[in-house]
Image (cartoon, rainbow, N blue to C red; front, top):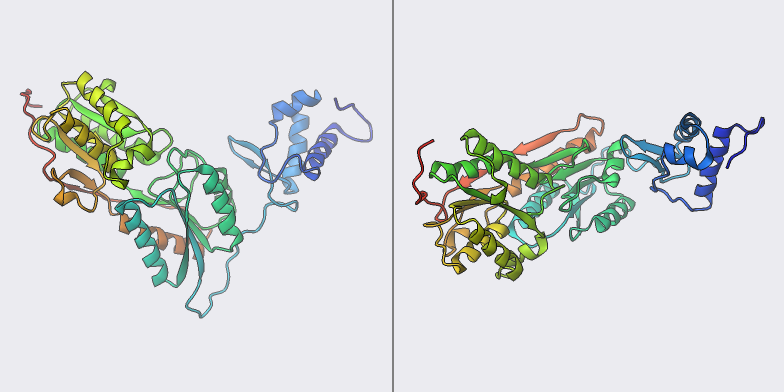
Length: 390
């Protein structure tokens, strides 16, 4: 307990306690410190006393605060480091390095996005550093620190699945470091981003099934909480149902799959056996389903294989539409109806936005949303079950 002293005010003693933790390396740069309530309880003082101590530390740049998250130790004892400063234009072909962090590179979607990024950077005189994060937030954090140490001029980030919030990305935005997020956005962090219109794409896909007289429409997805692109696709699916006065039935959803096993059908050409059996059980338990919207090609293709093994004919008995086109789709045994993203353009637009931010870091942050295209092939057909017209 801290004892009152006429010479050393209580808030000064608390401030010294925090300084001691930093100097003894018990609390490291980036660590979150105890909350005001925790410190007040630990030293038996009022929150106002603690607040005064933290305010002084914040003014000195020894800690920084994040609204709704708490206070953190600054990365530098002299305060937040200057990790970006505009440089005068140089008459040189190579303008510097730009980093691109991506969770995986195993299909044509991610490859075309990378192609768009690299091509546009080269066109504007920048070199690319590419880092694969393997859908790990820890690897993503380490990669961010490494590329900053390498002196990159800006960073493009494809966040890992399930990432709802990133303190590292937030810190970069707080000091106006040029960052652009692609494919999705992070809730609670106002940053520049470029992504497809996931809500509208899912709405159009579901509406296509409805136009074919389907009423019992399933929704299949990998685990979506925290992945805004998938959350928005669920919202688009529900929006289409609401527009046509079709009740939302949660029993028609199957949404817990892990991304890595589900991607096996794209990576290896063979559907994950566990995922396939779960889908088959789902179809057996819901025999009234006549159409399904799947959030991506791996889920959609696994669904089609599962249905065919059960003797359910696509599209005669089950219509399937999913997000994301893929390279050999037109030559598949059942060419799929899908929502095609403009992934090359997403990559290209992300670079254009990043260059704009590098030239003017203080500009208002922007969200660029690109349209999709419905490609109708052979996996959807009119519903064989008679329904009253809407």
